[in-house]
Length: 117
Image (cartoon, rainbow, N blue to C red; front, side):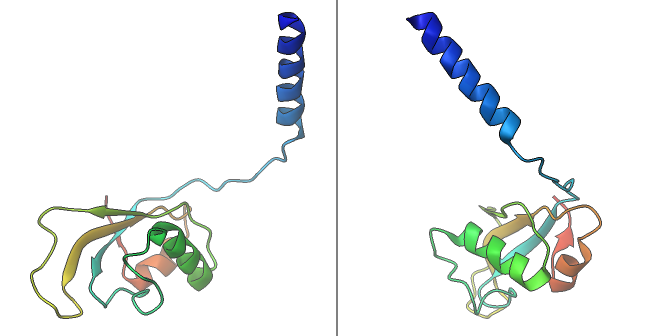
């Protein structure tokens, strides 16, 4: 009985693996970063910084604005980056990291991202 289940499971896995379409994944380029500000980041008017789905929403926003598919961005709190002020250009302490495909960073750099990591 166990051998039969194992053979059935192995067959199921092989069929699923062989049926997957070949996906063309572009190699990731250099890391691009942007300090998040209170209201000067390009997406400030369109996205809610406090959303639980911020990274997904930012990914969709960036892809819609640039026409370039990227892997999910990362927003990380970096101690010492926050500024104690309430002006639009004040840094929140969060840094946004993205990884656009090789050769397609320019549109993101034009938005204000910088090469770095």
